[in-house]
Image (cartoon, rainbow, N blue to C red):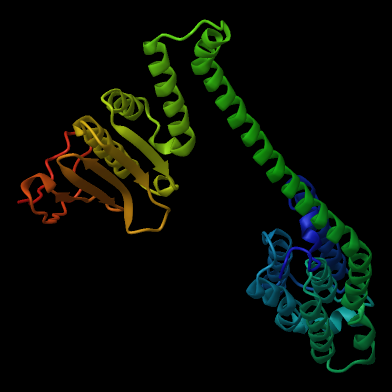
Length: 370
């Protein structure tokens, strides 16, 4: 049962004190009816009377406090309570009818069944009402007055059904407003996050690029080292946009040092680190830093692959002495493939190594080359 199927308990689900007050009032009314009927019919306080009263009180509490959409078993228990309680205290029904007082099991069961209607279980509530009516008639031995007295729960359920029919459109409107409010909150949170990220990026850009931009704005020709700094700064800013998960201070410093040696560096991030563990992410960055530090010429590409791939990241190095490909899978295993062109022949060899404690130095990765 979905929240808008008619469970009016949602109206009070966030007002626990109000719900407790309502249930207390219902139980107090039921207790008054029981006391009045017992006194007027001069009934003894028997085990069956107490058992029936406890049963109906339990049903009232269950139907009122069952959180969320009321469970099937709880609804069945409440629907059957009136008939069961009437049969338990069946020896008292005739005395109540002769004393012209209420059949208290029928009245109190009607209160629980009325709440069951408000909880959206209409069919079970009406079934329970019919069962209670039948139980009163049977317990009274078919006396004519029993047919009238047994209608008491029918009145309570009918009033509750009319109230529910009036209130359900309001409940659906509240549910729709809740959905719209949640959607607006999600949209606003997304906008706030985007604005915060934009502000962070602008502040970072302002902090790092402003000095050089102000230097360029002087219209004084740049010195060679200043031109080199512009090139390195532009590359770092590009790295931070293309590969945010790789843009740690240590990795950016290694990339800058490699570029200063004349190495062409490219960092790419397709989001695979978003779903990786912290240890594996640290290993990927450590391998990338190691390869950047080792590369002396040519170009190097560090790429994080999209989520869900067996291979998490690759580092491709193209040097004059040969090519080197390093792969890190989602478990943190490192595999290196070497292609030594300088020897006059090439032969690939790869050897996987399981991930180790990332707080220690990376172990050498075994590779074969000739």
